[in-house]
Length: 443
Image (cartoon, rainbow, N blue to C red; front, side, top):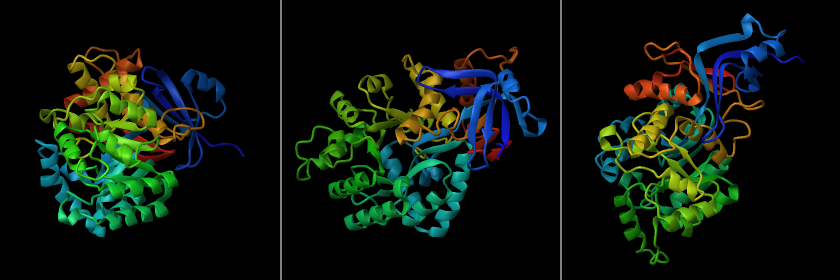
């Protein structure tokens, strides 16, 4: 049976690593298969495609996007879908922001109808900004998790947060309720489910210990927060040193080690203020960090002011990491905002190495690698999913519209977003998931 092919022509940026990104000024993505199951048949220059596919290229199956660039679909490795409505709220303090805005908003997700409506709206928005993979925090509620699982399009792991202490009354579970729900959701959703203690402050040691056992047995991912700011760290250590068996803990990371949560399928959001010993612990267990630059940014930049992540120190320690938006700590859902914030914050601090190419890799293939799906998604390669976004190529006044490198082109795209952060939701002309057009020409 002959394959039905589609040809998408335009500039191609294909991330390979922190320092490598293929740049094809006039290229083509050759797509085969039915929408929803389509794969990349080939990735090559247009001239080469004309020769190789001379008898198959026709006007009817060619989509001309010259003047635009193709990027892989994004991976957002840490966000709270139930916090979308509070991402623009004042953020003078993490703990105060949680109590005043976040917790009351999350409590609304006890309503199945509300959860269903919001999930449909949110994940449609997520497709619009080109995010088709990552790790997601839901609320404590089964109905909210079920709604998210139904609406999410892509390679996502999703978990209901577990909150058994130091939490509002209407968001507090008993230990048995938390454990029982996690076990039930693991059976129902399998490896799509992520065991998700909100953070050590809100989840008892018993729940984390028992949950880690069955999560590891089911080979599910685990996710939580770690060392986001100094106030949180001090409170956590004081709290846990009062628990039997934790009296002599030296660090926040050691808490998660003692309950058995560290491992190759564990994601720790933030990890900004970590000692050398903690980084060594994370590296040894292959635990990954998710850096959320827009959430950690200064309050003047609509972040929580938690500090600058030392990616160089993290990499020297051998710890894997990727980027996340941390909606609603982060104010903008688009990963363009996350990438440009990562680059700009490090440039402003005089830190070298935070290139645009590195940002793109950490927002695409790095996330796919951590989630174990990089053999079929995360960048462009024959046989991988036909998942990509189409973005107009920006032009500076007086330029002829030519771009000589991936870094230069990405820099110009990021610059457009930096001028109007909220408009980054509209940067993408078309988003395609496994060959199915999800959003088209909304800008």
